[in-house]
Length: 251
Image (cartoon, rainbow, N blue to C red):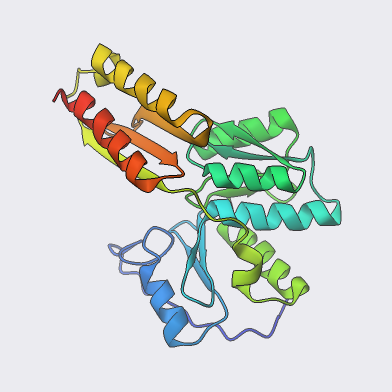
């Protein structure tokens, strides 16, 4: 299909060593700069195997996986294409995304982090769209796994059929402040078993209540404790992250 677009390619000269280096969905800053300098309508960033998608609107602002899923789900819901009225995402997806879906009659089902867990939850809930904030988006009507190219075409089709700028169709909610912090630990240890850490997490959860979320977990690939805190007050969540981090480090 030819939509008459002028394409300006970036990061398309691989040498065997520069995959994802300062480009693509993991480093979309150069894309945002290019969109502004070329006065482009939209930018598309994929990772090396093109299963992850991050986009950029005409203002040079990043559109992550949460916004892209909201955009596609809203359009599909209006067209009667949603299955089960449920979007599957992970614990990393922003709380504002979940609240937005509720306003349009949809619900968010959270799965463990990892696209295979998303796919499993989609089958269990009967959902035909799911993904991760990082840009893995699965549309089971078309594919059994994340496909960044296919997801970008869905997003572009929404923009074209709505006849609006990309910023108007993709900025559907204001993300709640979210802070991610990693702490390295020694192999053989498990900081999450410390009473001080459990107490710090419980204290933070009690303080936030329903106005935020806390996720503290061990990385599945590195000896890291990953702390994620989101809430309505950025200063508050910074303090909570610091409190939990100090407990993890034994300070």
